[in-house]
Image (cartoon, rainbow, N blue to C red; front, side, top):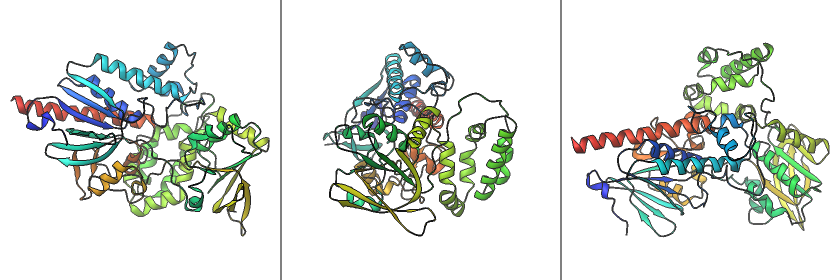
Length: 478
């Protein structure tokens, strides 16, 4: 039986907010709510993991995967840009602003800030962690009914979906391997290969996930003979800056505004700006940094045809320049290439077939008339998160779709979300009191998957929720 929420009788009793997912997004919203709430509030952080704030990105693992952003740029609070760096130093880590610290340190930082927010919260403002997975959500009078996989049921007044990154999709060419131990869909499970007879592997995808996977493989299998990397273009991520250059401060807004609505014009504008900055002795990355605030408006100015054109022709180029890798890990991968261990190829996967104790990979090099073949021991999916909600195996996502509470983005970038953070239902209208925060914001804003954007959205969403609650309280007491 679903328990009734005491807030549904319209009284001033404690409101209940369920946050589904306790990675960065969910934890950040909880911290902001705890810091700012004054009226009675109960926050339910629902996540099956023991570690709050970790998610996939910042979980404690058996390998020190580094952050892809320098420590001085990772503060949860933009008003305190040194906050993460100060935390790290306070724990005994001798970190410089430009250091790329292990990701699990960032998870520790989020948990520490959450614990502080819980301890300093106003009276009758609480937060509890429910170690379970949400499996079904339905509208109910005055709120929602939410079922968990441990058999319990909740009746929150408001729900924040902070589901995090989904796992990668299995390419159809690898479908026959999916049920075998020759295929690893989860690139974070490579530790399982430490004691297995593995001499050669194929990494499908050449982005940031591939960098992590290649270095992890080299660490656990130092005698690995071959690491084949295959992606459509064969492009590696660009490196983060290694030294400060002159700040040019180009007028990026003025350069992009005339190009709005045209993918071709936007590409031309970015190229012109980055070349001009580099020619003046600056860092081309500065253009992308300054453009970030403009990208949602630029993206929304593209019609369906232009967005499709961008995704088909520009997305890969954008990703390798926007989602960069620290120079150290990139240099390590390039060293593996110089030693002949790692090979990066541009091409298309055609078939994968089991051959006795190996996997035969048939692939066609980009622009080549004939296919080639490799024999490998394992195939590892490094293509990145699958943003198509319709393909999600998450029971909660399927429940949301079936109940009409969310609507898929037509370009398979996530789900449709209103400007105030509410999800848009099947009928095209925002669903009251049901919010989303996380990487599926890319469907709305394109540039929405990194910490600066997510932390700003988390703060704004918490403020919006609390302003609505304050208005409700005034209505009750007035």
